[in-house]
Length: 99
Image 1 (cartoon, one colour):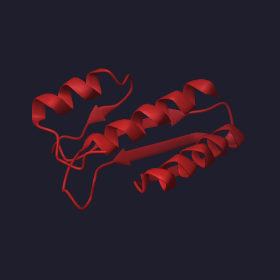
Image 2: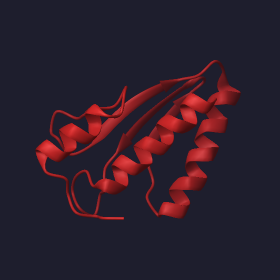
Image 3: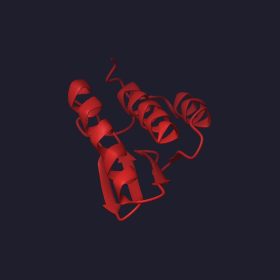
Image 4: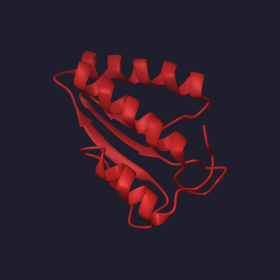
């Protein structure tokens, strides 16, 4: 998967197709807050995401408090958002909808 930085218009178009996700003010990352019914569902989501992220060799910055998972994605070695971030965001959205 491409590790080239997305142009501003490409990033805006990609995020527009990802409900709940937004581009950071500096344009260097995308983020979303996921809310689940309880801690177990939040943890299951994080576990599923962790397995996918490991396979992709692309890991999220995230935090969890009870049923809330806050996520920030960027490709650190590229200094911004790449297709890897968009693909991980897609997967995370699917996993959250499946719970």
